[in-house]
Length: 103
Image 1 (tube, rainbow, N blue to C red):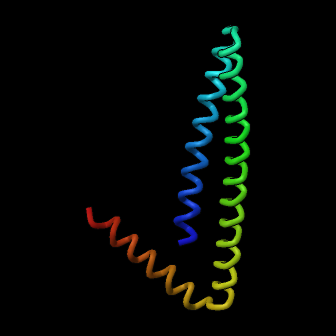
Image 2 (cartoon, rainbow, N blue to C red; image 1 turned 90 degrees about the vertical axis):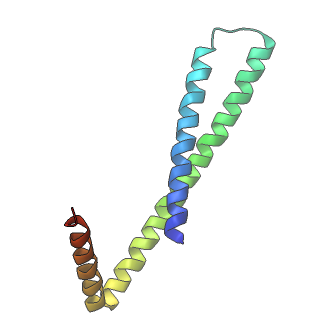
Image 3 (cartoon, rainbow, N blue to C red; image 1 turned 30 degrees about the vertical axis):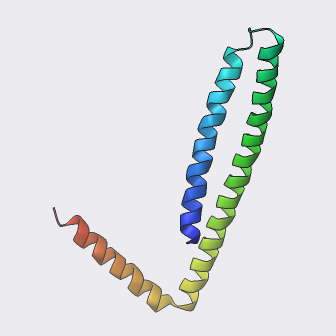
C-alpha cells in the first residue's frame, strides 16, 4: 500500500510540475498586458504558482522519505532472512524469464 501511495504522489508531483511550467509560461506571455484586471489575475496566478511549487517540494520530500524507508526495511529484511531473500529473488527471476520467453 505504501508503494501505491508513493506512485500516486510521484504522478501528482509530475502533474503539478507541468501546471507550474504552463503557468510560468502564461505569466511570461502576459507581462506586456496592462490594466488593473490583468495585474490582479497575474498576482493571483503568481500566488497559486508559489503554493503549487511548495506542494511539489513537499510531495517530493514525502516520496524521497518513503523510498528511503522502503530501502531501509528491505535491507533489514534481507540481512535478517538472507536465504528467503535469495529464494524470492530466484523465484522472481525464474518468473520473469518465463514471461519473457513466452513470445
